[in-house]
Amino acid sequence: MNLAQAVLLLGWEWRRIFVEEMEIATQGPATREELEGFLKRLNDILDERGFFLTEAMKPHSIQSLRTVFTKASATLQEVKLLHEVLTALDRDDR
Image: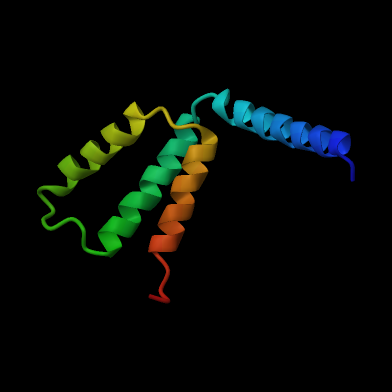
């Protein structure tokens, strides 16, 4: 490979990465259903693991978590990433 080919290949790869990043950045926010699905799964896992110390505080904690993730205006890609995080944390092979 000569220098011109190397420069061309490097430029092509930089452009490809830039375009992929732009596509991710221009995604709109996740739909309400996608976010609700994540929040339900999060609540189920937290409940199963004993996160909510008392039933009286559970609704407040759930609402606070909902507020955090709603304010974030997450994209579909980000919600998928959060699901992957839950999957990793919920593994039984610890």
